Length: 162
Image (cartoon, rainbow, N blue to C red; front, side, top):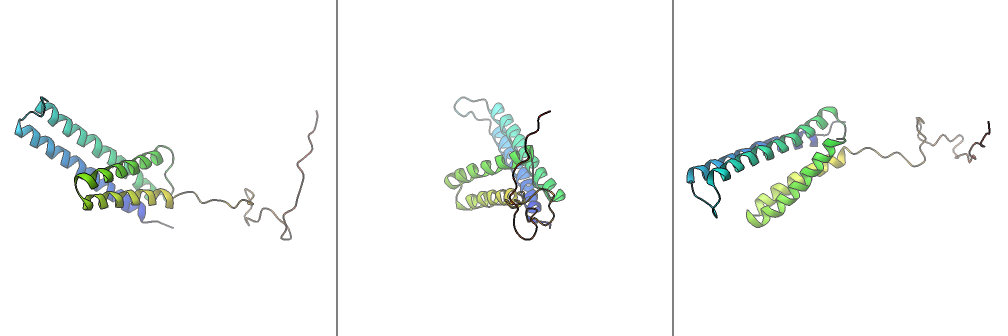
């Protein structure tokens, strides 16, 4: 069964990647045109660092969006580096949400929490299904290999000596 949450997360992360990169680039241009120093810092250095930070952060979110897109296309849970990347994106959104509440307001906080919830939903809905405790690997019925409705109690094989 296809789950639309992965597609939604991928689109949101791609849009957010573009938005973060564009806003930081714009801020770098503003700092460059103002040509003012902040506590003795070089304005050119602040401009370049804002642009580079925006590009790096945008690429990070784009990579997270790519992982979500691969999850949607493959219809399998993220594994390994992709799972770690999505978990780190969830942590980043939680921290950004906390900062957004204090610095920007409740609307931005709600946006960050919604993106956080979408990422967590993606991680949880594509989680591997749990097998029953009494299931035997390779048993198609899933009844633990029981015959007649009861589980047989068997002892382990006796050790043999060569």
